[in-house]
Length: 409
Image (tube, rainbow, N blue to C red; front, side):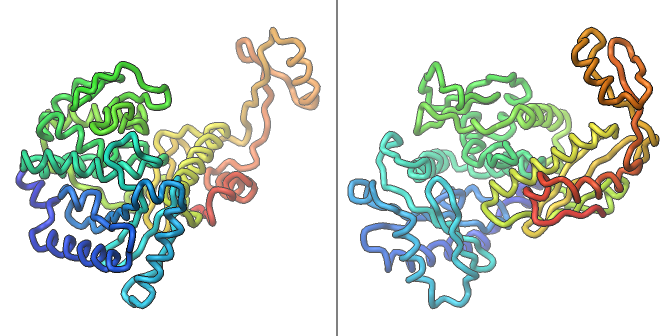
């Protein structure tokens, strides 16, 4: 794993530059704050960030008793404007809407996310899930201080999931959050041990590193993997994980153990040339919060997939790619050109009422029988897949609601 760590672990210089930037930012903010305190959080505070990852989480803690009923986002917004209005090196102060609004500031090459929270001593005191974040940092950091090797083992787990599109708990990904991977790695003491355990996982596996011993969780918190939050015993940190991503992780663990190649940790660069035999759509996403925009892109891609199947195209593979500016959907099909006529099936023969209605609607067509169902042969509007897609995106309001622009390449 030394080769992999050389590729994914930030150098001492990169770590120092990142931490210096985080310290400078929090110190500047704390000079303006009177009844709150900015602290560094996330993977930077835990020292589990990857090479080239320059996103820095800053939590602004407000006194719980004094501010529990106040609009923390509004208060923080005014403070941030006061602090950074004269700074020319930042590119905008953006409000990100969520269960409690937070803020983003770009200061190349860094992106700061500033989250207002209540200062709490235990999870039960939280008014919002983000209030618990410093407790997560404290728990992970405590383990790493006692067992230094865990920081790099966690990096391996994160890089493995990122390279295989399994990283992120957002609704459009439904993979593993960074915190869940930290818990899993700590629970198994190394990345390799995690792979050995994961290769044997079945749906419903439970990981309870603090031995909370919770017997039941709310149905909304149940997923194929139940990773009990060490600081909040009634929370499953892997609640967002889909069955598909869980199964992919298990299969990848088996493959890795069979052949532990560095390729498992290397992200494949998106290349249009590599998918040129597919039908490709270039998409300009809507503006907004990443999670919401991403969810709309996924819905749009799957809607088009459904329409292709309904039209008679046999889709063998479909996927997508999204960067900051644009997205691509692609669909591999067995045949790009279909016959002029297609079978349009009606109800089963035994459903006389529905059968009569079908025959009335299609009275000008020969009614044919296929087993227990009837059908008519209709002419397709388009026989070529790209012509079909062009017509679909022009006429379907559902697609236009989900994206700013979409074109067939």
